[in-house]
Each structure stands twice: as C-alpha cells, then as structure tokens.
Image 1 (cartoon, one colour):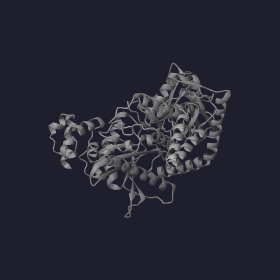
Image 2 (image 1 turned 180 degrees about the vertical axis):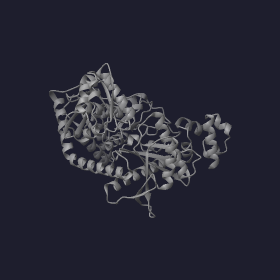
Image 3 (image 1 turned 180 degrees about the horizontal axis):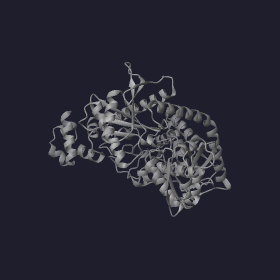
Image 4 (image 1 turned 90 degrees about the horizontal axis):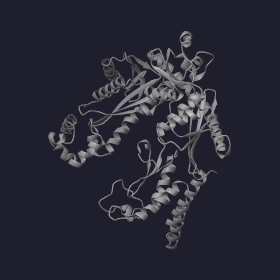
Length: 587
C-alpha cells in the first residue's frame, strides 16, 4: 500500500468527486464526498476488509475534482462511472430491465409487453413494473381473451382468424365506434390499476352463457381465468390508499455485503419487488445512492415518490432524480419500509454463504490464471466467437466477464462485412472494430482477450492488437480431436494444461460456452427474419429505416439481385449501395 501522506495534506475540505487509479493508470473506482480530505483519508487509515481492502491494495494514485455543491459532485461521479465503468464500482448483475404492460395510444389500441421503456415518448399508458414476466404475460393473455382488442401489429388487408374466433372486432374492415373502444380501454385501465370488478362481472356473464348453452368446457376455462385474477390480486393487496404510487427501498448490511430490497407499489398494489446483494467499497450512503441511480437509469421509469433509509441524503437524491424522496418514520409506509429491511436481511442470510464461497473460488481461479499467463490482477476478460451458415451470413459476438461474472451490459454483436469469407477474416474484422472503437472512445481496456482456438486464432488477434499499438494479454482455448476444450495456449503459443476438475477450467469453459451461445443466438435471430431481411442485415450501413425502403421498392430478393447499382444509389448512400450490390452478386 502506497503512502499518500503528502498528497493527502493538499486535498481541500470541499465537496467533489475522486478517482482511484491502478499502476497502469486505469481508473478502478470513482466516488464522491461532501468533504474530499476526510473521505480520501479514510481509505489510507485504519483497517479494511473484503472488496475495500482489494481496492486500497491496488491504488497507485488518486485524483479529485472539486465541485461547488454536493449535487454537482454526484452528477460528476455518475458521469465518470458511466464513462470508465470502474471495476470496483457497483455492477448491476441483471442486464434486463423489468417488463411493463402497454396499452398503445392508437386509434385501435393493442395490449402488449414492453421492456425498453426509456424510448417511449408517452409513458402514461405503461403499467408496471412486473418483476415476474410470467405474471405480466398471463395478465396480457387474460385481457386479450376477454376484450377484442387489435391483435396484429399492422392492419391486415382482410379479416383474420382472430376476428372469426371473436378475439378481434375486425378493425381492418369495419369502422368501430369510438365509444365502444373507449369503454374497453377504461375497463382495461381500471383492471391494470387493481380494480377487477368490471372484468370479473364480464367473465361471470360469459360463464352463465356458456353453462346455459351446455358449453361446460368454456365455462370451466372462464372459471379458471376468474380464479387466476382473484389469486393474483389477493397476493398483491396491501392496506394502502388506492392512489398510492411509490417505491420503497431498504437494506441490511453484514460484513462486506449490502443486501438491498425494493418494493414497487402501484395503485395500492404491491406489483413486485427487486432484490440484490452487492459488495461494499464506500460508505453505505454512497453505495446506496449509486445503486439507486443506476437502477432507475436502467429501468427507465421513475415512481412518483421514493422512500429510502435515513443514511441517504434525501434532498440530494430528490434533486438528482427530480422526484419526491423521503424517509418514513410512522404509519403504514413505515411498516412496509421495515418489511423491506426484514426481507433484505433474510435474503442475505440465505445467500451470504453461497456468495462467499463463490467469491473465494473466483478469486482463486483468477489468481491461478494470472500466474499461468504471467499477468497480475486479471479482472476484465473479453471473449469472441463467430457464427455463419455455409460460409454466408457471418456475424460475430463479444462477451465480457468481470471478476469471472458475465457483464451482459457490455456484450456486443457484430454484422461482418460481405468480403469476409472465412472465420479468420471475420475474426480479424471483429477484433479490429472492437479495439479501434475502444481507442477512439477511450473506453475500458480488458486485462485479457480470450479467443476460441489455438495458434492460428491467437496470431490473428496478435496482429490486430499490434497494429493498434495496444498491450493486451491474449490466450486461446484449445480443443482436442473430439472438439472438447482441454488446454490453454498463451500468446507465445505455449500449451498450458489445466485439470478439467479445477475451478479455473470450469470458469473458462463457462466463458467459452457463453460466447458461443451469444454468437449462435444472434445468427439465428437474423436468419429467423427471412432470407431477404437476413441479406440486408448483413450489410453495414443498412438499418431498419433503409431496410423498409428497400423492401418497399424491390419486394423480393430476386428483384434486388437483378437491380442495377444506380437503382440502389437512389435509395442508399453510394458506399452502402456499392457494398449491397457487390454482396448480392456473391449469392
């Protein structure tokens, strides 16, 4: 641990953001403080354990930026964290945002599940979040079976099956009265807000009709649907005002672990919860504030009000998020707040031993990997794989593992240019694009690049890294004659045997399987769109808008193959038109 006594003496007693760097100059932690001097001193005095100890042992230098207010320091901290993604800051484990149910604001509305709500301009017709996606799908399914909403994304030219089985009013052919649609919308919105009376009444009426016509199978189906609704709402009911819309966040801390629990309250219903366990580095207040900001930044929609523990600066958080943030001290919300803390404690007690064991295994495996490859402090590993169909439709995938845990927010997909006719050319292109962009954006550099293959693949990787004047360790996972990974190869082409029953072998195999799965899934998604769409997806510079224009102009792959370069230039920029024209000639 370095002695920063002289440098610390010059730090002012003012608010600001600070950045810790390792021996390679990489920012490994970003924090903020009301008093920079006191906060920075705390890292280099007293005893530390766990993740904080690991951070302090790796600090080679620190910098700080003084701000005029705490809010400025918080904004600066979050900005720098997003830019540098420091390895000791909080990483949200789940890459997926929670689903919402959307009642579309169209002339003929649809009901559907949406995830990326940040892009939605009109958030008034979104209901959720639903941490349980199965419950969300079941809710949408029930409503769509009861109400004849529009089911197709685009209106068809003629009536479809949904109309003939009474699940649609035939919006494509008939002019439906606005009042009828509005009445449906009101009942659906009422149900999504927790009032099931109108839907239950409708189901009971349908049950009676089915029974009278001796359609007992339909009557039983409706009864089961009614039971589903009652059970769902009974589980969610809590004794709160019907108009209550807020989130409750509380925590429990033990050793170096912070267990966080979030309850989502919507229209007086407990619509779901989120729970997470993180390792602490800073003060509890700092870690909670960072977690809360990252959580809502990822999930897109803020509640009307937020209740947090008193260790958090409610005024600062309120100003940053631009919503009401408070700490409850009495009443029903306080009871719910205490319940969140109890759940956080129970979750940590159940998971702490497992998490601790897993952490020890990962640390041991990373230490061994570093020793085998002569690399100190391996943290971020980037792994690549390609996928193709008989030499066509090449795509590439990159997965990122940090501390041997997948960071799915950092995964990347690559459409490979049309002149890539083999795996090595495809690999060269993906690697070059990835690390050229890393240099341009000054983004995080990996500690290790892991390729799927031996000497040939490593050579290609070395060529790319060398051409960009980068210094990054490279290794390959080598397969035997039975196509099973059995050893590691370093960048000097030395074979390193790893016991198949070791933790390191299992973690490396997990990385290899994940990158292969990711690339294959991307390839299948492209192929599932159909031949013409797949071709367009493979040409760099053609996105959804240009794809629609091409489909509208030509309509089929055959007509596109027969088209001239000038015809493509009327729709596309010259460079993209040439690329598409040349690619079509190879098919």
